[in-house]
Image 1: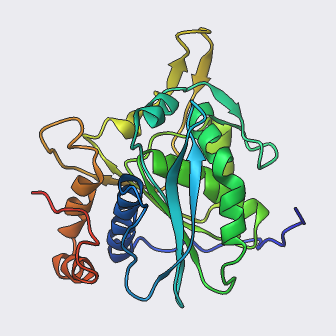
Image 2: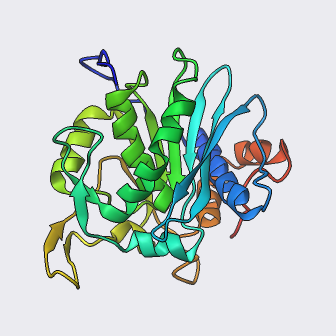
Image 3: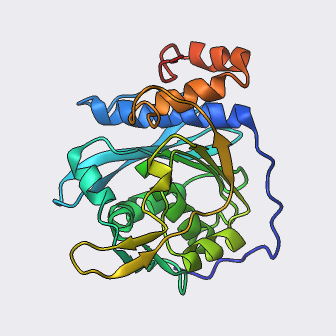
Length: 272
C-alpha cells in the first residue's frame, strides 16, 4: 500500500448528539441486515449503499457484519455488534496480539482483531471507492464498537481517509495502553458512549489473566468517553442498542422522531 500523506494536526470535532442519534440508528440496521435471511435493511434518506461486507468468527463461518453508506455530505462505515454465539466466543478470547496493520501500534484483543482482519480487505475495497472530499464516519455498537476502533486506526494510517470521525456505543476495551495512546494521538475525533450500568464497557478488565496460559494482559480504553446513566432492569437491557438510542433520544426528541419517520422503521424501538 502506498505512502499516505498525513496532516500534521487535526482539529477534533465537537460532540454532536444529533450525529450520535443518527449513527445509533444506522447501527440498528446492521442488526436488521444480520437478522434478515436476505440481508435487507433500511437505508436513510439521501444515502445509498456503497457496499456490504462479512466477517469470520472463531469457527471460520462467515456472517454479514456491516455496510458502508454514502451521501453527498458524508459516508458511514457501520459494524454490527454481537449477534451470534460465535461472536460472543470471539469476544472472550481476551488474549492479545500485535496489531499488524499499523507498525508499533501496540497489542489488541485477539478475538476482536481476528474478526476485523477477516473483513479488512472487503472494507478497503469499498472505502477506496468513496468520494475523498467528504468525511467518513465510523460507528458500531458493542463488538461493533471495538471493531470500529480497530478500523479507524487502520484507515487513518493506510487510506486517504486520514481523519475518520468515530462514534461508538457500549464498546468494550480494545487494546493495551500503547495501543490506546497511539490511537489517541492519531484519531482526532472519537466519542465513546458508555452507560455506567453497562457491563460490556468494563470488559476486558484493566488487568486480565488468561485462565489457560496464566499470562497477564493490560487493557485501556481509548479516549472520548461520553458517560451516560440509565438502568433498564437487566444486564442485557443496560447494554442493548435500543436502550442507548432511547437514552440519546431524550436529548432531542423532535429530531429523534424526524429521523425515525423517514424511512419508517429506521430507528431501534424506543424503550422507557
